[in-house]
Image (cartoon, rainbow, N blue to C red; front, side, top):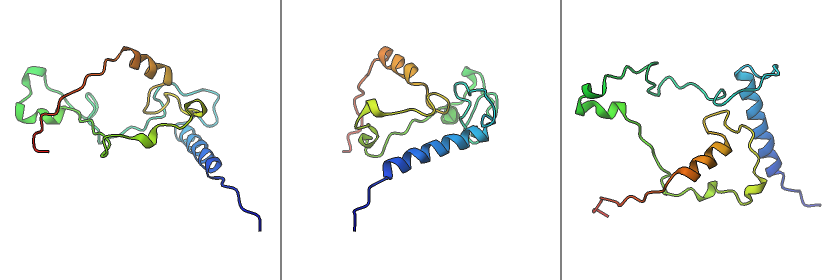
Length: 129
């Protein structure tokens, strides 16, 4: 009996392409020669607070300190505080199917931001650990 080959990599590529085709179909780009522009394949989230759509922001001076949390965004990190599994083994082999069309910006825009951004290390103020 001959050993079977592992076709997991090919399966994952086809799954990503299928998902891209579904997104194009859902947003009306499937049977059209028009290409989507930046962010046109991102889903609208009615639960997310969006000023002017589902959130009426008061003037900056009128925000009560006890309600300020409602008008702020929270960024959550990975529970392990590192996401090493997301780093590609061979970055040159990575192919972007939706470069900047969904929620993430395009690769050149991201690299430009990284070149300008300065990393600041924050000291932890937690003394319980």
